[in-house]
Length: 225
Ligand SMILES: CSCCC(=O)C(=O)COP(=O)(O)O
Ligand SMILES: [Mg+2]
Image 1: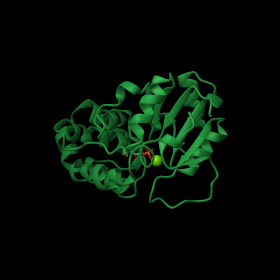
Image 2 (image 1 turned 45 degrees about the vertical axis):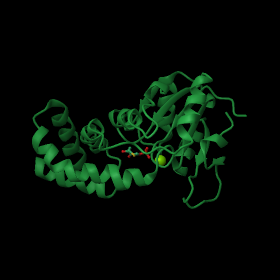
Image 3 (image 1 turned 60 degrees about the vertical axis):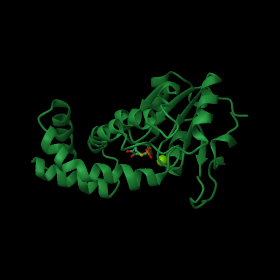
């Protein structure tokens, strides 16, 4: 059995299929981004995102920033202002019911059981905190947000950087060795382990099995908690 006080979960490829992101969420945002910017650029929140994107992209006007953001999206670059804007665009889709988050069937029962056992559950994703709340608030299994104690995005740093995991441990006030990180990406797990966390590599069905560098599961009910 693993002995931990908290579980930190990645989203894409771990609780939710990569296909939901690549075939549903990202195209939804890509189709709407230019119009969304045109309609909302005078709102302070969107204005601040555009300023940050201008700075990150080294461009000066709104047209160029839209082109740059679309370019980031095509390459799935996890650039913080892009992720913030995607979250705002997805909001309407979740509100109208057009978007419902995919969730692997083993996830909701495991989260409920771990929560009932007193484990604190957190999300760490490149998607913005706003997007994360929407994703878990509208899943195939219903609203899972009551099970979650907090959310972290790229404001704590990127997921392949050791410092990000140190910051999260400090923010949640737990010893690194008492935190378990679940992810489908080896470089993220390597960074978490270097920060002293326990790790499990979630390798979902249909995903090629690579050399095991971390303890590995294909479903959450195989996690010994
Ligand atoms: C269901 S994916 C939506 C979240 C997102 O925008 C993203 O980039 C996912 O990145 P992760 O770090 O969770 O792999
Ligand atoms: Mg992932």
